[in-house]
Length: 630
Ligand code: WTA
Image (cartoon, rainbow, N blue to C red):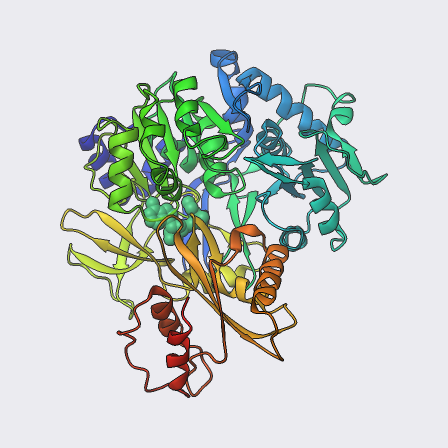
């Protein structure tokens, strides 16, 4: 009933979702399995903010992802796991088998005393146990916090501490492409700075020798031998926490975005089905890592809620060669393929022959996510991967939104290169002027906000509700502020321009400039730093760091590599700057504020057009920056 099959149906659902949101979402939610029905669909205000969906209802998301399908599709493959090396054995995990593994893993957690409301940090490569661990937490009502396994020990420790995690679930090591990461050793290092963690449960992946701490560290395989297959699903209130996922913001410290059980489930399932126009029997492939929201919603929860078959890939697009994605598509006859613009741009640089040697006949739909897609990449994707016959959905959303908000629906909606398109049912976007006035003309450019809640809107930032209010609900009272700027065309289609805050989007990963600056400033020879983004042909945005050093500098290269070391250890390799310019001063106003606008222009190479510099304390600084530009 809630599967949209035509553009007219989309329009009708959209109208109803705005006119009577409660009736609309109540009907959508009724297609799921609830242990107890809700008494109220929605209560909300954006002041505190306080948003509750399906109050009084009780459910377990894993029953909807797994148990519900056992009778009808128990033997159908739920997950196809493709390892890093193409020659290694893939795994085909049926719904029945996934259910069994989730229950057993959940029983291991229970055996260690992990239960409802406990926070569990998951730091794992893209192996089946990662998906199993996520679902095992949800099964028993423990709140998962997945940390991407490329983050450093320090970042991991910060996230464990912020959440007060009781257990860490990890692997021994990981291989991605040619890179190897000693995952367990990183966990050990992080745990030197964490006091809340009682247990570490480790899966075997690489079989590297690792140190096991008695009384704390548990080998998953051994623990599994001691538990049974039966694990009843914990009854969760709709608004109980399902997970925390950390993301960068404009201030230094990443924040734990909180999602709850009922609304997240309803929206993840609904958007998966309609955006990707998934049909029974299709094979869906999302290339994200489960460490990011895209992996949560569209590798784990969305597909499983719909009884789909989806591919989980351990490796990277260029290993062992740049045809790897296309080879996987042909191998498993993938029907819907979902990736990031940065991957497309990177693969384009290797030449068309890598994609042209695969037939890709099975593809019906292509999707992108994570950053604006430029027209050249869009056309390449549409022509060479989609062979001109697959619609492209450019899906705009955020960790905080839980699911896709702006996007075309499969082949149903009008499609315009580089435009995310129209809002999904239940989503009410507006563009605001910097003063907070709604721009009501159809064609407009402004700050993208939402004026009503959808079921998977962020509920809080973990442990600090005020921060949630400040970040998203205070700039424009009465609205959720996305932090993005956007344009709307005469047909109501949205085109995302990019972040308007101090967040940069590097290869689809969000990084706060303040976070990178804090890491740089840890270097003993650094007095001050300022980080900005600049356009990068593959990554979307690159990282440009201006650094003021102190003392006598004998070797600039040593300082730069020391700075990179600081960033690797504070955040991880994903935050490595593309350019580090050592400078003697930064452009500051008389009140001491760094004028980032000028730094961005210089980094972009727009040095003739710096705008008004008269308020600068020392305008000569600017000439020096331009002269030393990299
Ligand atoms: C950007 C990823 C343009 C945007 C799901 C947003 C996009 C941030 C798109 C969220 C898109 C995401 N077009 N920009 N289709 N999708 N973004 O939290 O700036 O990692 O605010 O969530 O990515 O990144 P996050």
